[in-house]
Length: 407
Image 1 (cartoon, helix red, strand yellow):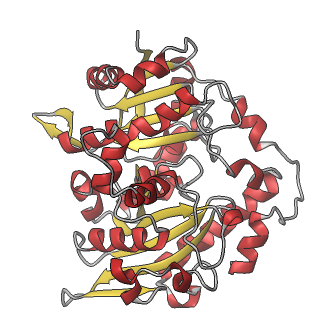
Image 2 (cartoon, rainbow, N blue to C red; image 1 turned 120 degrees about the vertical axis):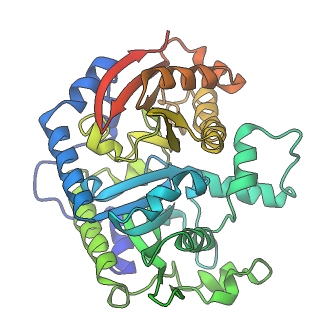
């Protein structure tokens, strides 16, 4: 898919040839209870997806998707993916080193996102709240650590740059340093169409040297030489398909197919992407994609905002990595504060986010995390709305065994 085709998709130019559905309507109709989540998780569809995921892992055929938590950003093939979401795709790397290094995955995709309908030539594309907040931090001299909120602390400490290209390439390079001869790609997803732009890739050669290819001249990636007029002067930079490795090209071809299906199925797809308004914030230790665990509830793009906890096992007991715990709680500030603030205006971001699912391998751990989250002042504002609910659950190997409301 070339750039003009991506623009056409973003403008809703795809043709429909079968029964159409309304994405906006179906997102509004999502209902979530502990019982419905359990039934979804135990469904034949969910079991089949998890079985396929395990087969792909055994064959070393998984792609690690290190992506933004944004509800509009999605992996193409959940049965082939391991997902690590964080705000601006910038969470701590160390708690997930074992995932990046796992030889049962064949490549890693670092995926930022943007919104092409608002794109202006010569300017850094918007669409990611985390990067927008980073730009404000830079403008304000990185803020005052003594007065900042939890999400401000996360952005100051973790988000390297407000630019979609630089942010992606920089993080991809950091991850590549921790892998052993594995392909690492920097990809930007236009969330108005779902289309992928490959902006760079790196792989370690047998000699140990790092081979890197970028759609942007390397000198423009230095802070003092940053020039969006040059980077975006002719549009979103990307590497042509014939120049990328075969395993990455396969991901793009699968994405092309999925994007085409979305536009055929949902005529209003592009129109629903101007804001994110998921029903649920999911905080989980599982690296299996949400769509393999709850395909009916969270199968639609835009249905959930996700933050990952890094985990450790000590004497067969699962604990959350302390650095990851602090980071995840700070990140939760962003959707929860917006949800409480925008509650009465359903046209705004997160105004329909009335559920939080905390899902780990131990129900007691999930309860502990929920209680710690509940102590945050911004969380207490969200909990003032009686229809807002927290669900805690226990899921092992992708199989949910316990789920209940936090009371």
